[in-house]
Length: 482
Image (cartoon, rainbow, N blue to C red; front, side):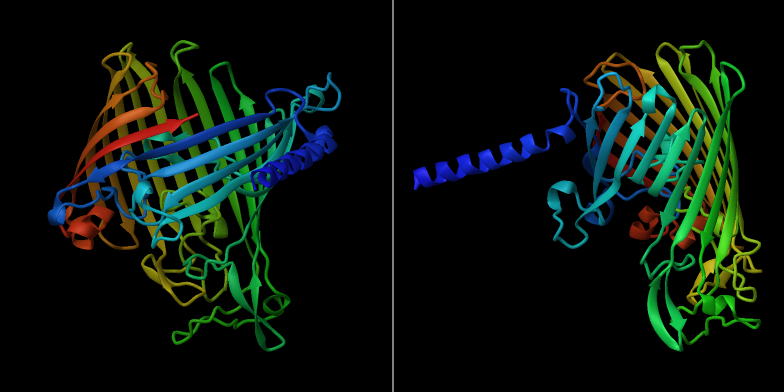
């Protein structure tokens, strides 16, 4: 029996060796042919409500981590990448195939208590699987194809990617300071309140299931105004196609009936986005201080940016059911963040996020979508935040944060809260920078809600404990990236 097992292992090893030799021309030719990256956070949190419970996020609803991210749940990313060397040794082209696996729990369960088969357990996603060739023939040229987290600007205090989050599946070309990409967005989420990608297509009098595609064309260009200032202009064009049946209809077009949950056919629609970004370096050339100011305006179906996300294809609000389109819908977004050193022992970071979005319906309040569901047709939110990092020593840092958020849905009263967070942090690498990882943190947060937020239970914390003016959170967390 032992000899049989040994023989089987030798056969398997020989078979794999022959495959490797047969495909050696496709394998990386140097020792750096494979790289591995990772991001993750894990820990425990609690409060003493209802006899003790897992801690709930204190931020306002529909804003995600905007308002402070120290209360985020467990999360893990694993990013393997294969690097291929060109056939000719003097070819400087860089070739990479990268995949990213993301894991998180759909409930508040801790990673250690979750499996993919448990209720509300672990979910595995693949947000990235793409190939890229850059520095082609030594020129400032690159091309990529696949699913990619295609974004640059991140507000770390709020874990918020803003302005240019074009993550999705598609392709792109970059040449010097100009970037072109095409992203294709489709979804089978039939519970969504936004314009449905999944719908019933009426063809020949019979209902057939169809999957509607949104195409997003993006063009960006950088202009270097000076050594310390860079300006970026951005434009997007969105289009969702319609069937021949709806395009041939003349008014009055069909609209959803109160008694029907069916998705009625609707015509094609489009959207435009215009954006501008100014990045300015502050202080000495190598100080790391900066200011980033971004403005973005989206129209029609490209007015997205809600729930803590900034993707323009997450259309906000309700359509104009008379015109059967999103004509008149818009969104305006402003983000400004600044970072600089107050002294050798203090780093300061501040930000402001303002968003105003409106759908195409005539009202600001609840309006019906193509599904016949009701959603708010207008929202306005504002968040201001500050963080000070005090370097007590190389390995002991102290984080203190203050955040203020307010949000108005439709014509409702404004919901508002303030939060202060204190987090003594151990940094085993001994780096005196805000980006040093891993971080070992103790987190203590205290928040205060106005009367409107209390009455509406407008926070994950309030939804658990009921209408209270004060909220609190304790946690022991670890975060890393590499």
